[in-house]
Image 1: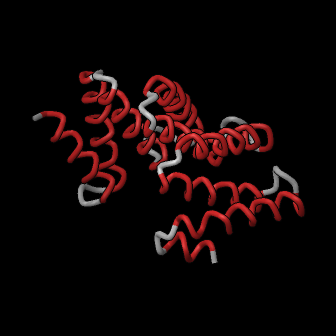
Image 2 (image 1 turned 30 degrees about the vertical axis):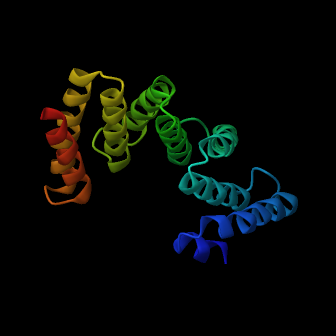
Length: 174
């Protein structure tokens, strides 16, 4: 039911169901079980869509720490959780914290998945946006140009990620 409510954008109605699902799964499976982590991610999504960044951040930190311990710091799922936390920092205007995590995600993703892996490219795009927000315009433009070039080669010129990166780059050049 909570998934349906989230799908419908009924975040206030989904929240108590998400919280109850997380509580039940923690009790049944423990905090580091994948079902519990999924429930935590669902509640985080609800908080995100409500603009409740501090609560989202608290859960994302918990998930990230559990995944780092359970799967390792270089596991793709852990990297995704780090990127999610960086996005939460970004949405709070906490550029330096977002930048620090995004740099870690990019470097690890390049080593683990490759420089042209879609997850690495998304991380590059995110960091470019962070740098642009921090007024590091030259770094942002250079990184986004690299991201566009690699995304075009990997995903094609008509892919939504390519188009999104190109739009950002065009808007920064104006």
